[in-house]
Each structure stands twice: as structure tokens, then as C-alpha cells.
Length: 157
Image 1 (cartoon, rainbow, N blue to C red):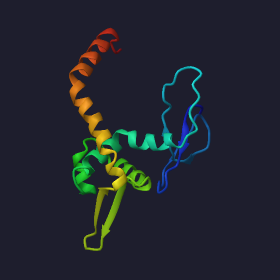
Image 2: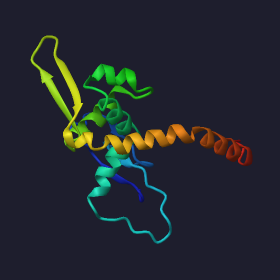
Image 3: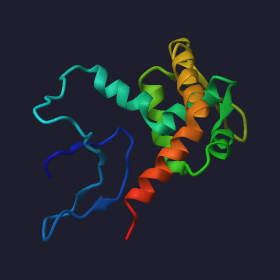
Image 4: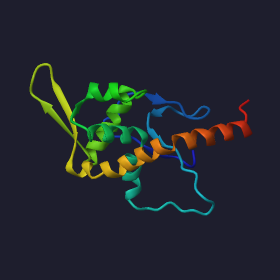
């Protein structure tokens, strides 16, 4: 399975996936889809790539943007991010917590209450993510027009 980097994230439980024809089952893993890179390009071995994959992930951008507004509970985050599954939100929060971007606070009350907030380091991402969100909002009409033009040139079958 060339072109994919397989990773099993801490805390991933259960499940297995079937490999190509007749191969044995193996524990389920999360795969990074390969980026389209120019011919002859060699990926950088730098560790920054791993962190950039985390903070550049679409779900992470939403979580960081929302937590930049205030501390939130899991349910609030889940309701605020359209189309995210509970599992994906859990994986995203764990990864951001592991990287020191999000802090998770468990309050000793019944029922249990868990709050998520940005760490001081996580707050340093707000300007960058804000610029990305602003750019997106500003250019949505152009993006929609470009997509329509592309779709007209390349009809789906």
C-alpha cells in the first residue's frame, strides 16, 4: 500500500479492517491521505509536518476557532460543528490536547463535567486561523464561480 503513512493513535480501540484480497485482518489504523506533490519532490523529514497536519486539519480549525471564543464542553462543540461525528471530535480533541493546544479540565461533580479551552500556546493560533476564516469568507463568491466553471468544463458522469 504505497503512498500512505499508517498511524495508530493512542486510545484508538477495537475494530479491524480488511486488507486487499485474502490478506489477514489487522487492527484499524488512521491513514494520512497522500498529498499531491510535484514530480521529484521529497517529503521533508522535519517534525513540523506532523504538527501542521494536526492544526491544518479541517476539524482542528473549527475546534480551535470555537475554543478561541470561550471554554466549551464536548456537547457544545459537537453541536457547533456541523457534520462531525462524536468519534472524530474525540480524536481531534485528544490530538490537540496531546500537542499542548487544548487543555481538558475534568470537574469532580456528578454528573461529570469536562471543559475544553485553548492553552496559551493554542491562543497563538487564533490570528492565523482568523485570517484563514476571513480569507475564506471574502473569497467564497469567487470560489463558487470557479467551481461552477470547472464543473461546466468537466461534467460528472
